[in-house]
Structures are given as C-alpha cells and as structure tokens.
Figure 1 (tube, rainbow over the protein chains, first blue to last red):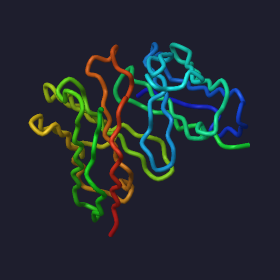
Figure 2: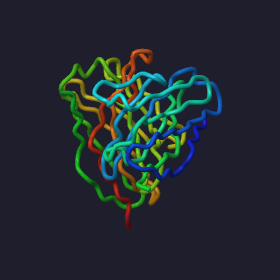
Figure 3: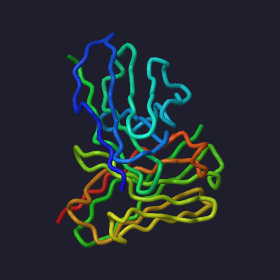
Figure 4: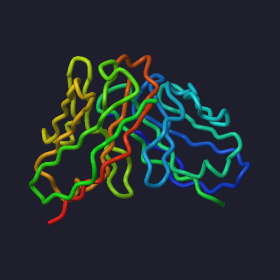
Length: 107
Length: 122
C-alpha cells in the first residue's frame, strides 16, 4: 500500500497569510493526487486534482504543485472561510489512501 | 446538479450487518464509479472500496478482510455498501463519492454524499 503523510498536522495562521501544506507519498504516484477541504460535520470537497488542476468553482487562491512523491497545496491569501482540515489523497493505485490531514486554525 | 443522497443513521449491535444506500441524480449513473470512504471520530478518511456503476465490477480494501460488499441497482441509480460482522471500531461516518471510471479524466472524488453515521453499540 502507498503511505501518504502530511505536514504540518496543525497550522495556526491569520487572515491574509500565505499557507503551504506538504504531502508525501511512500512511492511515486506520478501526478495522481487530489486535495480536499473538510469542515466539521460535512463531507470533503475537492479543491485540486491531478496535483495541480483547480476544480471548477474553487477560488484561484488555492493552487497545487508537485509530482512523484512530493506535493504542496498553497493558499495564497487565507480567507475566513478557509479555516478547515485539508487532506491529500493518492489515486495512483489501490487501495486509495488519504493523508492524516492538516487542520488550519485561527492564530 | 449532481447529487448523492445517502440513507439515514444506523445503530447496530456487534456482529450485525449494516447496508447503506447512495442514490445518485443529476448525471448518467452508469458513466461513473461510486467509491465508499469512512471516517471514524477524529480519524483520517479511509477508503473502503468501489464499484463501476456501468459494468458492476468492484474492488474492496483488504483492510476489511472480506466484510464489505458493494453493489448497485442501475434502474434506481443507487449504490449500496454492506458491512458485516460489525465491531465497535466500525463506528464511523460512511460516505459515498463519485469518481470517473477513466482515471486520467477524474477530478478526484468530485461529488460526495452527506454521510451516514453508523454506531456499533451493545
């Protein structure tokens, strides 16, 4: 199974900050990686797919990069609606696996 | 608009089975796959398995040791996930999610059900 890790596990930031979350896979997954945002009591919402493609309707302040084993999600200017937990997920091979999540909270 | 609507919360005893449904609307059901993902309290998302809604092919995570069965009814545009021999640690919110059958065209899990809480309690 491909293991997926994320860092940091928690991130305290202020509105307007630039935020970067890192995701690492235990072996190459090419660009088959997605990023999700989840708020308490809600289903996740896809932000980025294929490592860097922005899902329709997602604000352009979200961006993704990377390939192989290392990936990043960047929020260029954090907004109040962005305080949530973020997960990466590899879909290169079964079983599909998620990272442990990064909680972005208010500093 | 694309929508996945799941069945309601369940409370089960250890050793029992639970079957959760996921009704799709707003798109051609057979053109996509439905995946099942669960989330135990405070835990990460865990992939359980998937079904190609078109041809019915399925695959489940070996982490569930054969306890999971995923089926679909194309006439009802509905997918089902049955989990047997329930344990206390199966207490979780169970989600269905849509994924393109052809991986290069997939936008990840681009639509999710609202989640179904399954509580295993004696």
